[in-house]
Structure formats: C-alpha cells, structure tokens
Image (cartoon, rainbow, N blue to C red; front, side, top):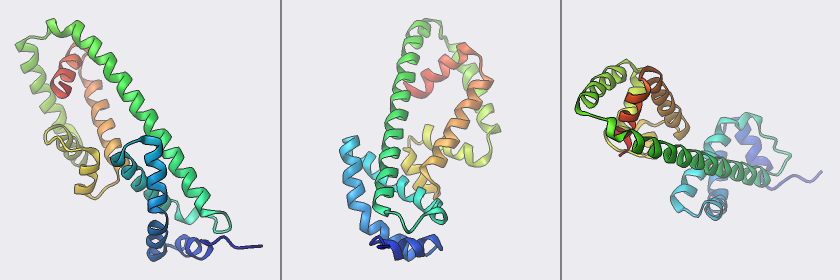
Amino acid sequence: MIKPPTYDLVRSLKKGDINSFDRLYHLYYKKIYLFAKGILKSPEDAENIVQEVFIKIWEKHKELDEKLSFESFVFTVTYNTSISFIRRKLREQSFLKEWYKRLENERSAVNEADYNDLQERIKNLISQLPKRRREVYMMSREEGLTYTEIAKRLDISINTVENHMAASLKFLRKHLDYNLRIVLFFILFL
C-alpha cells in the first residue's frame, strides 16, 4: 500500500500533535481559502470558512484516518461548510424579509408606551441570561461586533457565538408576546 503524502502528519495529528496540525494548516490554508472564496465570492467569508474547517479538523483529530487522502477530506469539509454557510445566510435573509413585512404591517401599532415597556422587559430578560450568553448578546447588540470579532475577543469558536446568540434570541422570543416581539425586532434590527 502506498502511503498518502500527509500520512505521517495526519498520524501525528491524530495523537494530538499541535505541530502537525500547524504544518497541515500552512500546507492547505491557501488552497482551501481559494476554494471557499470561489464558492462564496467573499474573501471575509472564505477566511471564516477556513477557520471553521480547521476548528472542525482539530475537534475531530482523533477520528482522522491517516490512510485516506487528507486533501480529499479537507476539501470535502470545506465544501460542506461553505454550503452550510450559504444555506444559513439564505434562511436569515428569508427570515428578515418576513419580519420586514410584518413590521410594516405592525409599525403603526407601535407607540411610546409599548417601546418603554419593551425596553424594561428586555433589560429584565437579558439580566436572566447566563453570564457568557449575556456577554455575547451584549457584544453583538450593544457594541455591534460581528460573530468573528466576538469569537476572537472571547477566545471561543464562531459556532459557540452563534449558539449563544440563537439561545438568547429564542429565550427572548419565548418570553415576549407577538406584538412586543415586533417592537423588539424594530429596536434591534432597524
């Protein structure tokens, strides 16, 4: 059997060797960046995908098979991560379009009392979030940081930031009635 060119690096990575991980990163970074950029048409999004791919590789390093082509594996992971990213963006756009329609229909119903009531309720609900989730939420909504910036500042993965935000928004939706959710959307996104 002929060993793939990355056999020794993957074998060492499988044992948790950070130097092998670093060498594989440098060996494949540019290739998968260009591949992701070709799919996404955005340098920033491609950079985020590269980071996600290597985070996934590190998280699954013990499951790698050194006998298989690492290059095929890394390109498959890059492709799947890029497609998932596109799907997520399309869902977000669809969701926002629906909310804009609802907001236009409900905008006339929003008054000062609703706004003040909602502000108090939101502050109260945000204070009930777990500390890290509250921190991520505030960095996103109050400071206007991107998920990537939050992840770097808190030294956590982008997926963790996304999970915290999804859980925070779900919690807020669960505890606010429909009309107040419309106002919440108005406050947070417009």
